[in-house]
Image 1 (cartoon, rainbow, N blue to C red):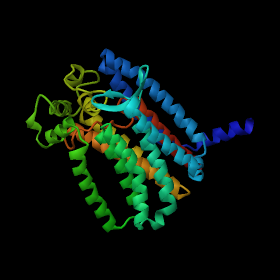
Image 2: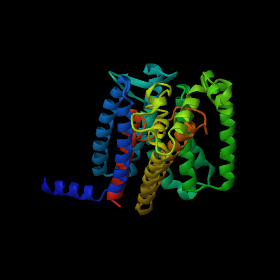
Image 3: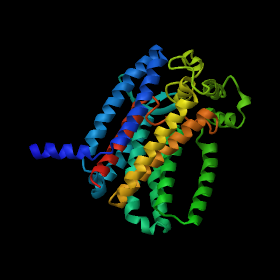
Length: 367
C-alpha cells in the first residue's frame, strides 16, 4: 500500500503544474464572470459550473495517475471508445433534447450531456493511434481515406443534429493531425478542394434555414439588424464599450441588462471584454497562448509518436475552438455555436477538456 501511495505522490510531483495553473486561472475567470452576471439563471449556471470545474480537476489528477499507454497498446479499447462515441451520436438523434434548434443533448434531471464533446476527444485519441503507426506511409492515399472515414461518420451524425460548428471542429482536428503527421502539398490541396465541395453539398442538403441566415448575416451584417444580426451587433457593442480597462466586474451593461444573448456561453468572450476591457482580453490571450505552449512542450519531450500526436490533436481541438469562438464574437466568422474552452458555461465540454488534459499529464509524468 505504501509503495503505491509514494508512487502516486512522485507522479503528481512530475506533473506540469504551470499548465494546471493556467487552466485554473481560466476556470477562475469563467466562474467569476458567471457569478457576477447576477441573474437567477446565471447564478444557477455558476453553481453547476463550479461543480463541473471541481469534478474536472479531480478527473484531471485521477487520469494523470492512470498509465496513458492503455490507449496506445490496446487497439480494441480504442475501437470501443470510438464505437461508444458513434452510438451516443446516433442515440441522441432519437432520444436527445432539442435545444436552440439542435438535437444534441441528453438531459438527466438538471444536467445536460452533449455526446459530440466526447466524440472530439475520442477522435483525437483514435487518430493519434492510427497516425503513430502509419505516419511514415501517410503519403499513401489509402491511409488518408481510412482516417478520413473514421472522422466522416461522426461528422455526418453531428450534421444531422444539425450542429455545423462541431462538425467543423471534428474535421479541423483531423486536418491538423494529418498536416503534422506528414502529407504532400498536392494531397493537401486536394483535401482543401474536396472540403470546399463538401461545404457546397452541406449548404444544399444539411444546413437548416436559420444556419444559412447566420452565414448570410455574417456576409452582410446590416441585412437583419433586429433578427439574425442582433447577437453579433450586441457582441461587438459589448466588446467596444469595454475600452482599455473595462467597465468593471459586474458592471457591463450589455451583458447584465440582457441585451447580449448567450452571455454565459457562446458570447462569454464579449462579456469578459466588456467588464475587463482590452487589458483583460490580453490577459486571456496570454493564458490561452501559455496553455497551448505548455501542451506543445509536452509533445516535444514525449517518448513516442502516439504521445506527440495526441498532444498535437489536443492543440488542434483547443486552437480551432478558441479561434472560431472569438472570431464569431468579433464578427470575423459566422455564429456557429462553438464554446470557448474552459471559459464558456457547459459541463460536457468542461469535463472532456479536463479529461484530455489529464491524459496529457499522464504522458508528461511518464516521459
